Image 1 (spheres, rainbow, N blue to C red):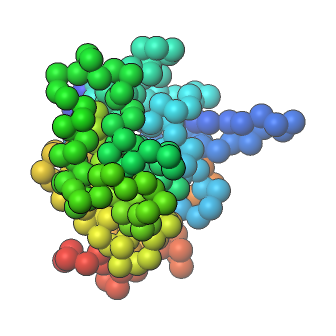
Image 2: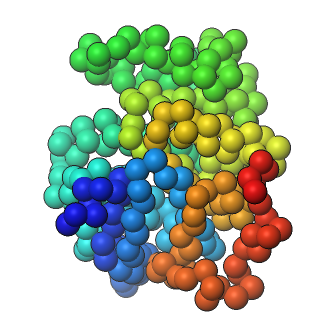
Length: 248
């Protein structure tokens, strides 16, 4: 399993089946490899299995069969507190709906994931949260509640929160789905800049070819399976015309 130890993410024959009176196969023997420091997007129509794949790679759900290796660790074999600790230390999540606590300030929302563990950290969580908010351009908004922030600002808070544990990888589920095109481009450029400066692996799930164009490469899902881009016909993004701003 040499490639498992060299890559950040390796999924082998990843399958997820849900049973609700009848079996529904959400993912069917998916194989992917994402290298350390790589920026990868996952595209596909609604119901293709994108979010299921992200939840499995983020260890929020367990596969029906197959293997998931993250930074050389077989997370399929982990469970309980061991799995929760691994997730907390290694994975940062960015959600489409921000998932901010409305009664907490931006600063408190960023600190929240590590507050139960703050005494065991080699850094002051309060200082780290402040530094991250400054890094995403919100140094003047620390004390603002989510209701006082724009959609783009809320997503920047969510990005700072995803970075609070210094994760080796970031998983983003439609991170620009609730902002306009201009703000979406700003969010994606911020993710790209953070990836480069912090040497993190980033995977973005999206249905938007403009957003996918920020990635180094893209996996396409259809009916729970990875498909070759050349087989997508009219569904295939025309990359000659859909290019992320600033990318050649």
